[in-house]
Length: 279
Image (cartoon, rainbow, N blue to C red; front, side, top):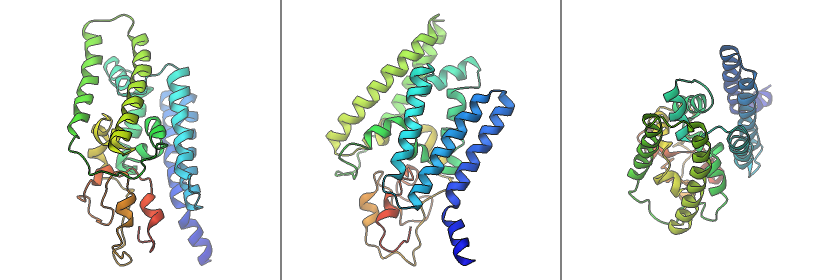
């Protein structure tokens, strides 16, 4: 009986994540009367649950599996094939037109209210930009963190100004421009991210300093229910968790005010290296 309970507890997180996304899928399907949402969020939820399941089974590339399942689906299928701008410009566009679909729903679920549940799990498990950047050689930062966080606010404002200008000028080919801005924007993101990674020897430099999406993610992540916590009774202060964290988070501190606390992407690298299973 005890072994069965332990197994249930072990795989609980995968089941919870699947149920959350399945609930979202069914709710949007029924309220929006569109079967696509049932497929969309069921697929994403199943992919995320699979990642958690593989992690519990100690498969070392568990998170990467989910990254590619979700990232390529959103970039290739939704972005390239369905012509949906899933970048922040697409969010502004649909917000201004008053249409609650596509990028608007994506942002509400994954980047505005979702982080209250799973923090910045989007950055670790689904982002198609990070999906590529995580393949680069500098998985562990090799330089102290820069004070360049202000750049993300600049890119956030510029994206808003860009879309606002299109509406103010009443551009007639707005949908076409949105698609091209998705292509060009992603190209800029990848080039910038790769250059920064090699320059600063940090795969996640783009996420820390440039990405405008973090403006939505950071405040909500502070209250996240799913967090990496440290059992101080088990911790031996070996420092291994801090060394492998790609986002420079002090995971040994259990408070929400810990250093870079809203930066955690739930990559679980710290959990993997902990010799005492304290995380």
